[in-house]
Length: 167
Image (cartoon, rainbow, N blue to C red; front, side, top):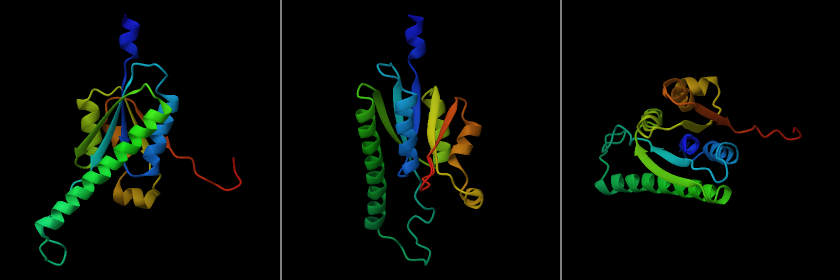
């Protein structure tokens, strides 16, 4: 019976609007999750916080509550759309996989690290946006931050570069 317990893994997959995260999920489904396994795949979407200015825009104009509500609804719709696409991919590639989906609010770096810990993830799978040195210096790398701060193993899946004429 110990064998069964050891094979029940909690695999946390960070997803967002980018192709990179969907590629990472696809790769995970094909290479990490085995058929008929007792693994639980947890899809996590980190909804970025609303801009600091909240009700004031940069020119000092006040946003109406209708505009703020519309912005909030848009963020929720994006999260739902991303998770729906991810769940469909899971169903298409691993029909019997146990899948959970979560939306958490906050900076993706912090949210992903906190949820990996809180959910007792056995492995964290995430895509790499492949930013260059300058862009990474300004934006920071979510995958690098998580690799440094999460206690469980982190699998960063890079999307292959598409070069015409190469293999």
